Length: 144
Image (spheres, helix red, strand yellow):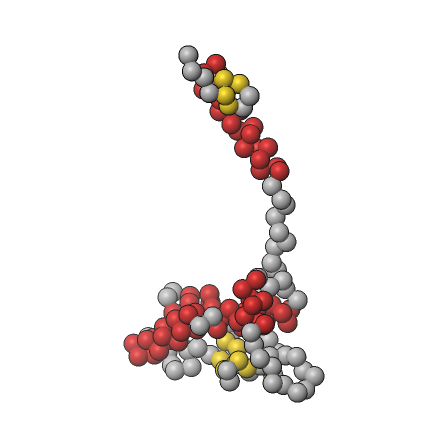
């Protein structure tokens, strides 16, 4: 009789229930050995000072008109593809002292600063102010 060693015992000599219990115990041990979860990211507060310029993605008009809806969708997709939402999210996280993801750090580091003043606050990227709302709120307004 050919046997296969598993969990230090022959699996042919264990009942199905015993094998399941051994497997569950092994899985539990493996989970306990894993590293503790990384620090969770605090929620971003998107409210900003009234002096900070913002862009309303829906400035073209009400979304019940097909032209305005198409413009809003086009702008939203463009901002997603170009990581504009992610860059602005990184800026807001940096301002609030929230831990950045590696991609956010990379995008934030790629910005060039031509500001000679001591003010480190970013008001415009490529001459465009930050969106007035986070991307997921904008998406929910486009597709309710």
